Image (tube, rainbow, N blue to C red; front, top):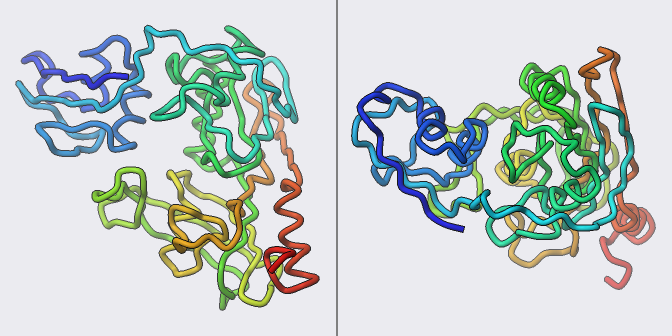
Length: 309
């Protein structure tokens, strides 16, 4: 881990920030630069700027805690629940608690460590050495389906589907409180929380974010919903429902300080996309983990989250 400081030369004047970083440091791809900026890890002259910022001569670009990709990420024999696999795509049922790729404080035990062991070099390289094959992410404590690209062509096509909304992602979530509507949409831009970079928040200057929801089941004090994402911002579902005062059960970041249930009740149940080679739609679904089903059963039988309560 190290901080990096880059100085903009005259020939790069007017270039977008994400592109300038990739040109100034060959170890950082443009995609990785964009991710670093989105994660609030890039400062230009001590200020945060967007990817579209046009750099000026002698701008000082500080990148916080960059993983040194010259140090090879270790392959680890971690079992994977593979739901689907072919020559282009892998769909994995990620367990709660698994980080998707190496980042601050998490350099082993990640999905990437497991992918490198099981698939070696048979992964796309667009995300750089720290994110091979990773097309999109799930939070550490979110369970469910995530797609991985085996080659660059598949990666580009799958990423494009996420942007043009032809890929479909359906989540199950249990929120605290009784939603007053049977269905609806939350449309609110999301950006980095300036006072805590590990958190996101609804901010006017943030990126557009839309979450569609539908009530599946009502309980005393809780509501089970399905969420369909139109965009895929960091912590999107968690931030949106926290903002409207219905935080997710078990959310230690955006929920109440005293967590009523020891698991985040958010599960990526269904993933649907157009196959990058066959152009046929692939749709896969997985049931939520046992703790998720147990919590719902407790609510149905006792009206409480936990058996002991």
